[in-house]
Length: 528
Image 1: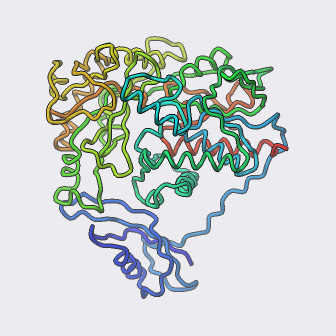
Image 2: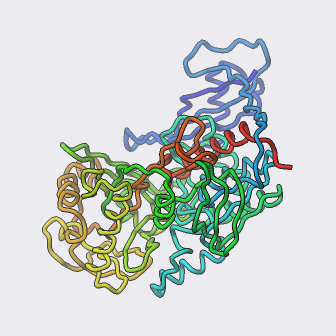
Image 3: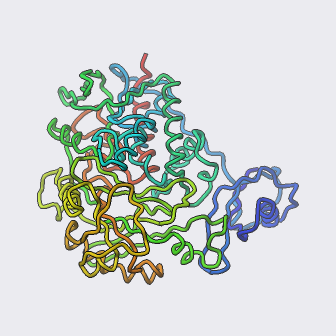
């Protein structure tokens, strides 16, 4: 009999043996009667400092018929059968085509490949190896490749991030995502930690291993291959034209293009694909000493190896807007993330060890269609461009990102860098960030600083460093689709993931890709 035992509370110095003893004690059994104890979840309870504790849930096995306690912390685990996918009977003309190798595209491709559908996956950017070289060259020299960069290339934007695997969605496919990432090289802890992450250094290897598996199963992945046009006939997709002047004929196309594929959005719009404006958020990256965050969150236990680098999540609901932290990267870097010339875009990134000097997070404010100054479906894209171009100008029009001490930002003045040194991977220049964001965004940020400082003492330190601008928090558009995940007006076109407006992070994007792959399998027969 398999059990789930929850609310097992241990000290920071306790180990595996103490966990096993506590599990048996909670079951009121001898240790030798409890087999195959596996950690299902581990979280940190830091509410009562200095008595920080680790809280575990474990699965284990006991003999059938054995008496177990009547407790909400002990449950019998029912065997969950993975859905058996029965292929449909419609014919695929050619092979299914997936555009984009971010989490949505790569997981869609993986599921299709595992079921014999041999997808073709095209990616406008380079593979991880080529991409890493070009991104590092951009960071060092300021020369941007508009097709291979932090936003575009193998693995999508998530490859140059913290590799966070947290999500708000409640879907059994989330487990599938974690299991596959683990199978392809992510650390064991992503299967049980409450806030799992892979780290950009490990994630690069994981996406390469996933690529190789798709190819081993008969799929084809083409890098530096951009979709420049889509063929639609009688309301049905029938092929895609690429920049290599090859036409890929197919009646199944998955658009997993990511939230920064603005030229592809425009191409689809001109071909009659419907778009809707969608709210998102904009702001800056804010940096603090990681040691400060550790001390505030963990007190005297700060630095304990069982805890690692501390994170935070802050949220302030205001009268008309919400200001919040987003994509917090403990012990990480602020990275230059532009995908268009003469613009500045920032993002956050951490390696697996999260051992850099600074903590950084997006500090952003919600914006929506009423702010976009146009009813055009792609107005949100132009709204982003406007502030990214202003950041480029405010930074000196030479590729430098504008940076500013928090105290100077509050008082609208240009000062000097203080005790917090910028981790930004490109060039930077002290400037007034108030001049490259809307007034309603900067005023909302300023209003929230004191509130956040009460929640996280030290957040409002004058030397905290802002880097502008953060504009790519999520897609500014949504492509409407029906209950079968197809575009409402184009049969066989499947908008997927963040770019299509149906996800917000690695896991939710991957889950969306899995859903679409499963729907394709249920609809279409395996290609001959």
